[in-house]
Length: 84
Image (tube, rainbow, N blue to C red; front, side, top):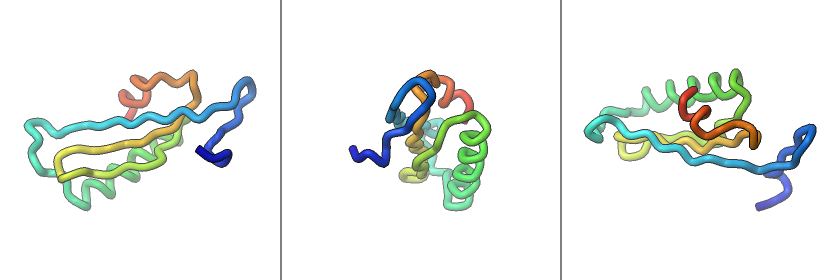
């Protein structure tokens, strides 16, 4: 972990990251490049609005989505999962 990953807030210094995975029902392979592009744009917009950062997002094997998000320590992982 380098110093470039550390974020500074008014009352703390932090580097909190979450890896969140969603699966398609019955793991059906329905996620294509067009859907992945749409989801990346949508997740970035939501993250900016809600005050966290989507570091990386990708579709795996056309049946699940990986999101690597970074947030302030006061932001609960369930809040991030619930908003995106």
